[in-house]
Length: 53
Image 1 (tube, rainbow, N blue to C red):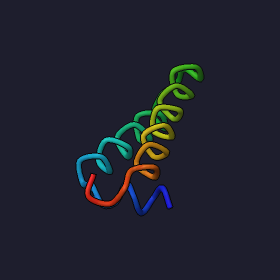
Image 2 (image 1 turned 90 degrees about the vertical axis):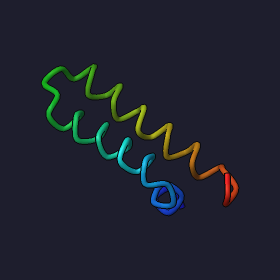
Image 3 (image 1 turned 180 degrees about the horizontal axis):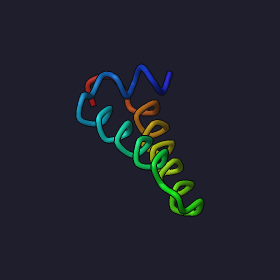
Image 4 (image 1 turned 135 degrees about the vertical axis):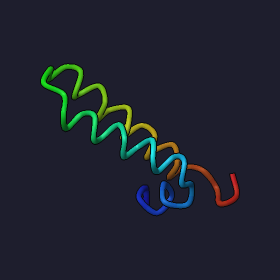
């Protein structure tokens, strides 16, 4: 469900993917984990939003 919700908003989708890409390149584990957590939080928030929000 979260992926569908993210894909409805191209800017949000780009931000989530940018965070995931940055985490993939990050050499510091703590920083990579924080980036993945931020992307996950955005996905969860998008999944909770009603269509049109």
